[in-house]
Length: 171
Image (cartoon, rainbow, N blue to C red; front, side, top):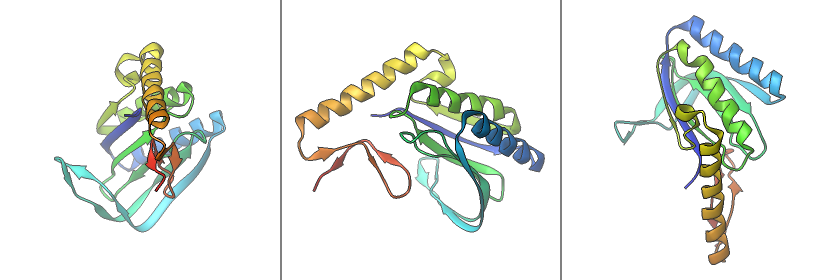
């Protein structure tokens, strides 16, 4: 359950990194989103490759955008090989937030050797607001049904790491 955008790819080169950061900063400025640069000498990123966990530990850099209080942060965080693998849950924010994230990913896509995007709202492929709205509605109703029928659940809940859990046990 949920409306999340998963994305991964490797940038072409160092100049592509600079263009991605510039595009992200311009979007944040235009939309009034808070942003923070990332520059870590040592970080651990949880990753999955070929359906197996394979965490990365090493230097990272990039940018985090905070598009809406009811969306997860958008992390464009790259490792030493200019690879990133991330996701952002947008289902609790207005549909326009999801659309702006997809637009940014489309804008920066040419900077990647390849960029794979899996959009559970289907906006990446369809660019249909109606299809996105139907996914958001279905998600809302599924969560609401669980909250109504199960008194031991609560949600959504923002976790300490900035992620949002749809439902969590009250226990």
